[in-house]
Image (tube, rainbow, N blue to C red; front, top):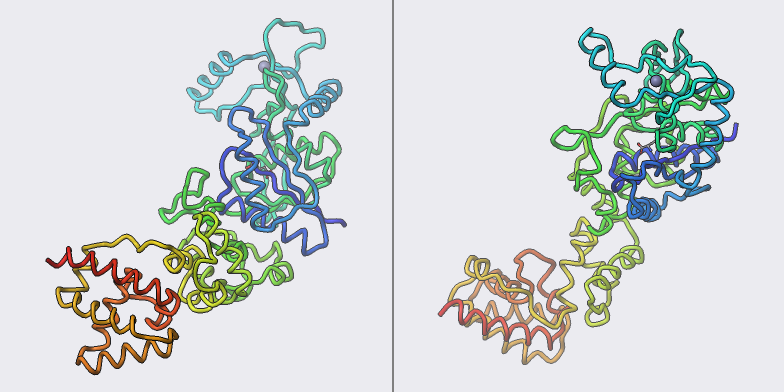
Length: 470
Ligand code: GLU
Ligand code: ZN
């Protein structure tokens, strides 16, 4: 069997981690089986669907390298086609026009609730005569079987059965002529010959209705896997409104696409106790059977941990490419400072994301000092610091060779000669130049700044703290 899977998002918001997990599992399953993965944008809800979201969906998948073999198909471009099939179904008595209208349906529903019955359409128009005429608007409903059961074997949850008597005659075309979501899904899955439908468990209730439509059209049924939902840290279902879960945001935060996929693959799937998977390993090891039935929790700290792993194991070339994008975005020239390769080597293992890396090193490329924080300055320095920095300024000025060894030596000598703890020298220099007492070795920092900029920035800092400690 040629395996075909699909990812079928509705463009009503940005993709969150749950959506991407659905995409990833479908993609992995197709790749693993040398099959085909289809991207379909389900944009028939004209009010809630927005072009901007379709674009973001495509950009997110591209960023993550979840490439598709077919598509993107847009359902909105196929409306006529769906309508033709609905006409065929009307002719063949697989569907019927319902003239009940909102008011009547509401009345029926209210009565059902009063009688403690499950509210559902009562089939009033199901058997109207062929020659029935009305000026009222109508919807078109699918003639769901009245009796019997519909079952399917979910690869994650096992056999799931619904009684037909519990299922409504589903509306497949609205009053305005638009085909509905459940109908379009069925037609597209059928015509694309999808063999494996992998999607969120919020679709379980749609599945028996979709199966009945597929059966009525004599189509082959796909296999179904419904993934358990992902909860946020407040144990609420992840939604498109959750900001922290918008996947594309993590591009701006300097995450690696591989790290995102690695984190996501483990949200509900496991292979022994392994946490880190290359893409090839994922493809090789992934299977539907090892997907977990219980819901998983989106944990930003773990995501950060996974990204840090990729940060320390990625090639300099790879980090550099992302780093340069941050330089460009911030209109900063990366040639106006130390070579990126050297800077990446020195800093990347300390950082969890490329953004963090960029923030720690951008000062080396700027012509202006960082924004001083007097509170932080007062916390770590005092009046004496002014004199210390003045003296160290002179030492640096006199240093003829500017390399890490000479720089460190000069600081050490100064500390011994003046009987000042090395620490009490290094902290003021760090604060003067980078505004942070934690960073890589002071010799490296000064080397990266270069002599000219070190002296310039020290001078500016001196001017500033003379005002702080008057
Ligand atoms: N368009 C649906 C959604 O975004 C998915 C449909 C499906 O996977 O069958 O929830
Ligand atoms: Zn009706």
